[in-house]
Length: 172
Image (tube, rainbow, N blue to C red; front, side, top):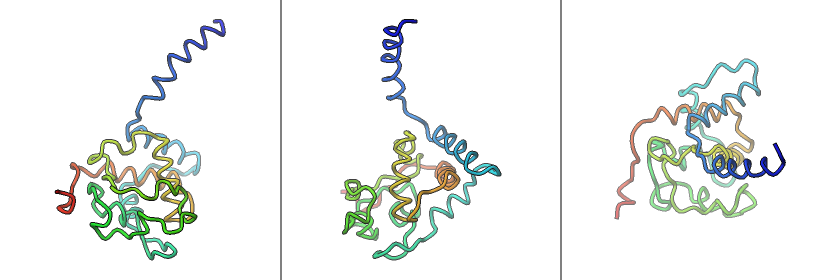
């Protein structure tokens, strides 16, 4: 095959693969491959371990003890508007941008549901999921999350059923 034909074929395939969305299950499969590489004794993900990870509080300097549920709520199907719930201000407004790994992403107004059942956009792109985990794990845990932690969390989130919950404060 000539170099020209290879370039034409690549040009035809690349937009299709770039535009193709992952499913949350495909993202989970990638985390399983990564977890198996990270630990030889990997035996799968556990939804209860993922739920515990989500609820576990961690000391965050200048804010106090926070968990994933501090911003994403105990029910990950909830959609919230900051300032209308008890989400710590610093979770949405990083007072010192140096404290946040991605300052431009620190000032979002709405936090959409975290569970894929309530937000079909969640975990549909591996790269975006990785960006999310990089930012939030570094901010909350002061380290990167392991593939096991990511997979456990996603396994639990996939087990959460039901559509989005919009609190009365967001219904105008």
